[in-house]
Length: 522
Image 1 (cartoon, one colour):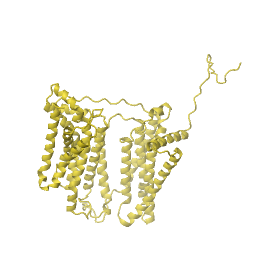
Image 2: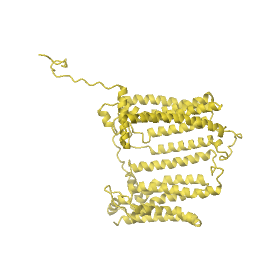
Image 3: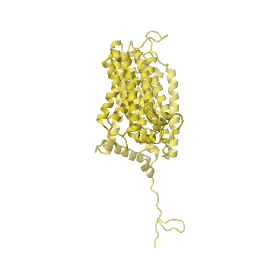
Image 4: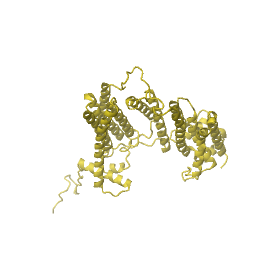
């Protein structure tokens, strides 16, 4: 009688031993994950290109981008030598590369790529097949960082080659800056991406920190850009106090080298630590979704109802969209402040007369304020508008709450999210026009009041979720009412000093009346 060759050597066991299939080598694992990634992209694009062909296209596109950046660097260096001989090409490249690197770092740690590994849509599939998170990072995150760094590195190499061919090489320090800046910020971005991959999102974003970081980054970038672009637009800047005629402001190369070295060290140390953390935890456990915090029900009844309605928006996608719009407005305002602090005059182009600048600026500011207000009003009204929470608030009134307090609290909750962007646009208008005016704020705030009035007069159809469906009539009425503070002063300039505040107060009063009426009707 023969025995199985796979019998267990332990006593009392006669069954076969199931040997674990050895894991495929690292190169094969990465290729399988890359093919899966390409297949996902092809499915999203709706194409039937074979995976092998698509892989060659992706590799060719990356190589082509690097070669194109190299050629662009050479052309830029030769053009700068001819058109602006005094321009600080090295400093401008360092500024642009640092700006792009910090933007990529923000995208990997705060933006849409924050959870591309830790909360991947196929995370459970990877865990079930014992796929390592480091391999997923190499396929899904590292190519994005590596290609961006290679493109900027090729652009720096092109600038160096073009400067040498033009007969004015940047020297040892300039060469180190041109070639080292992409590497340093690439390492910093990789460190941030690794840290994000090893630590899942905790369900909340630190909006004040993001707002402050974006404002500082935009302001500093605009300030540096104006200082470095001075020779390219003669006459756009006022004379800098203490500067010699014809001198180009900028930071000394030793200062830039010291800062670049610090960035490279931080990036390298962070990348090594992030790689170790990710390898240790692989796919980190998901954290429980944060609970909606209980509002503090103290103080006047108006504020209590405003807090209750504001809390309903927590962790919603419309709140995130509203915050992104606010960050964009803050960054634009900070960029204007940074540019003017560097000496940028208005209008920025010498060929543009003051009369033409003022004639184009007022409608432009009004249009920007109107579009910002309408975008924010749509988000806020969809979340906590009367159409969605009218029945809840009527229940509060039927339970004994004062109608005036409920209506005013509702209007306060609708208005507060637009207050910060409105104030930022006032500051931007002050920088551009030189005069302080509350008209941009009135236009932004009037948009949400106009949306409230239009929703009451022409209510849209109700969806299954309880929100309002798309209604062309409601949208048109909202735009017409919100555009009145912009269109009327442009059409009748004599009414400019008093018509905008009057129209804003009219919209606010109309919105409050509609909210008050909705508590006892419908």
